Image 1: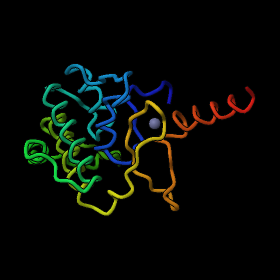
Image 2: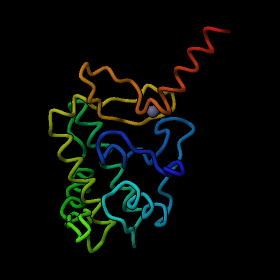
Image 3: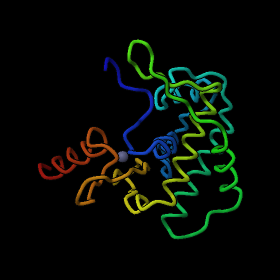
Length: 182
Ligand SMILES: [Zn+2]
């Protein structure tokens, strides 16, 4: 890859990658990565299966994102989420998702009439699946002090601590080293 991707991925589930577009969630350094339609469209192109972005309602997407976060947080705590968050995610999940198609060149091509809405439907369906599946017990908070990301720990021992070794894990390792030499 020639340049660093704009949005962080690798949380292990599409819905977890989506909610981390509120970077550094819960810290004073919080960053909104979906401020407008252009940003949302760029996220859809980078993180979803469709090559196209297209028209997008960023405010609605942010609402969905926070509802997904509420659902996952509540499920992890063994609580029921509020009715509005449930309704928001259910509504987003209703829409058709991208459809795969094999091209004559043997490549997989994902199509949707409305790529943004279809990708957000994927996010919503992924969230509904995650909060009701055994994988929920494998959702972790990144140990990075201001990261705020959730990720799916698929390591066999289940002791992964960082959303990514390349960023948060690496930073922690360096800080440990610096602490030792100080
Ligand atoms: Zn992290």
